[in-house]
Length: 198
Image (tube, rainbow, N blue to C red; front, side, top):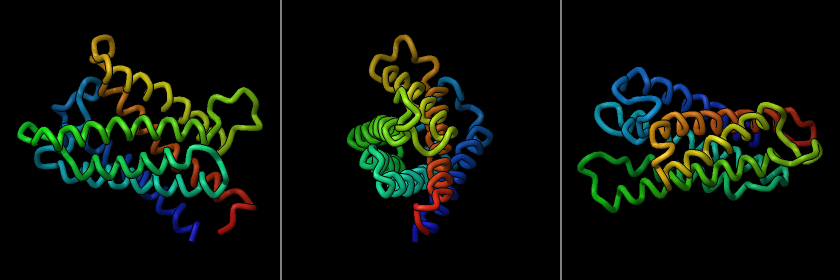
């Protein structure tokens, strides 16, 4: 059973990254530095980006099960990030979208980043001083740190856009990509542990 969850986590993460990269080619008018990622959920290719967010949500749910099974902190936050990603997928926004849907989408997007960076940092022990508390290997540690820094700047830029408004798109892309890689690293590390079961 857990082998299937790990496979789902890896495949879902890889599909999210592939779709995310493809959107840069399909929607070249959206600036990768300034452009709001929500713009990918509009127009002809919006459904594809929605599938991407569903994949990211499944990857977070799978990673949260590994984190919980291995008794690491942060599992509820990682699971919450997965649920938030599914809400983002279910509430795409456009110019004519109702205000209530826009509020749901933006709240879920903010919660997705906040919960994911908090859960990844806690589960990985990203900012613990000693090696004993660190978990899931060097790749997970590195990308958790990257996601925590870029994600914190992103959330700060959303709350107070003046100093960081010109790079919010880049911060968002860095954060989500790092988090997707983190879920893959978690699944790989858990699979490599002899005591983690099948």
